[in-house]
Amino acid sequence: MTATPYATADPPKAGPPAPITKAERSLAPDIARGGMLLFIALANVPIHLWGMGLDRYGHNTGQSAADHVALFVEQLLIADRSRPMFAILYGFGIAVMASRMFARGMEPKAVRKILRRRSWWLLAFGFLHAVLLFFGDILAPYGAMGLIALFFVHLSDKSLKKWLWGSIAYVVVVGNTLLAILYTGGSGAPPGDDTLPPYLEQVISGAVASPVGVLALVLTGVFFPLIIAGMMLQRAGWLNHPEDHLPQLKKVFVSGMAVNVLSSLPVALIAVGAWEPDQFMWSSAVYLTLLGGMYAGLGYICGFALLAHKLRGYGRRGIPGALAAVGERSLTSYLLQSFIMAPLLTAWGLGLGEDLGYLGAFGVAAATWAATIVIAVLLDKAGKRGPFEVLLRRLTYGRKRS
Image 1 (cartoon, rainbow, N blue to C red):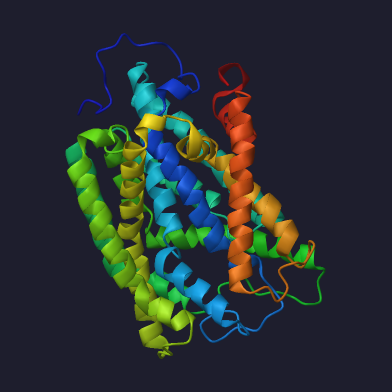
Image 2 (image 1 turned 180 degrees about the horizontal axis):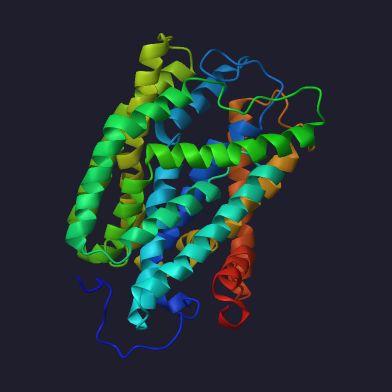
């Protein structure tokens, strides 16, 4: 049997590791998570809008020129980029957890058991999030992916690379095609019932959307290569020690941004009405942006790693410290976005999203992200972890291990 790639020469210590301390954390992954959460807020906020008509491509009608500019920029640089970033960083996090447990002498079976329990709880968190607040939840799909990723945690680098290229081939030929067809086959939201109270409609929509979304993403496999790539980044040390990989990081960042713009330009033009393709060309444009978004997500993460290296002199102070504080509490910060935006904007809440243009919506998203930064910094200064991080760890390891 191949030795685990995480084995160390240190004496093994019984049991799972204690919570990772601030001194042990790498700055680049936390900054990347903090920046990614802004992308997530901007990508998710249009789903909370209501009261407007939709064009045949699922975009809100009645938008001003400023709204069209804002939407064009979001579609060009943000849309379908946050989920690849999340998947890569999720794979990175799984690899970090596995490496710490392997370093303590735990057997692969025991490591997989703990990661399996954590993944099931993420699935549960995601389902409740989808039902109670936001049908576009991403936690449940990543929990499902985490269950499958257990197979990869102890593989050698050579085996992991084979699975990476195999999963990429599947996504290019099958998965991305299916996902593009799904994206362009409906309005992008679960069908509603105007006869139901708004919040009951949200509950039903979330209860349907969560398992359907999980199943769709598992079958298309679009997150598999991204999660594997995140594991490989952790092993290679690109995010842990960006100073040792600056040429590679710069190359991927620059090429990733080029792919980012070129692959998303068609859907950005569609979004603002500059191009009105038929169904086949629309699906092709979505296929292109989804495929390009996978590499663009990696490019963004490399960009954040370069930023962390450039700001390394500040440590965890100032802007880098604020971004890192959010990144350390990414689960809590992600859920906080829904706690703020959903009741504020939706029809079942205060309803402020009625007829709200894209520019205003993105402003709300940015302000929400800024609020999560303030909360994360206050928690950081108080020496507190995010409450949902504490809860997930307790459910994963048990009270005595939390």
